[in-house]
Image (cartoon, rainbow, N blue to C red; front, side, top):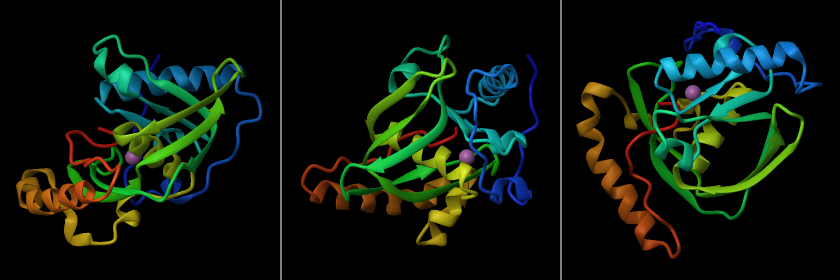
Length: 197
Ligand code: NI
């Protein structure tokens, strides 16, 4: 295994649509997954997409809720050729970061509930539903496969900040929570960590 270099915002590999993987069980794919797992763990990330390690392929890794609770032996979900479908129209505003945009956080609207589907490394189909941070991370990682970085999803770039200045976003975070609480069935997602980190 090896640690891979992580591409930073500005590199064109992060802005290109990634190519489908024809054989999820192929040896080079298996190797890439191993390297990405180690790289994500080392960077303390909660998600990583292949374009972030300069491989323009439709492959993402992420920690789901259960995996996050099981640190340090946490094993990320590996999803090949993933697809997403929002389950309703509810959007939540939440904090995100990205290993390709170190030191920066922003408030990003995401679908609160999604279904996602893809292939596991053994070729089996994975099909699940997710909400909250789990849904947010999957949407963030899938965006990487379409050349989209989280600031490109932000309606208000005043809500983009260095980590050292995050306290100044507190008011916006609280407002988002209030709005979410006012909507039936919606849970505020103002929480802690953030996609990718
Ligand atoms: Ni990211």
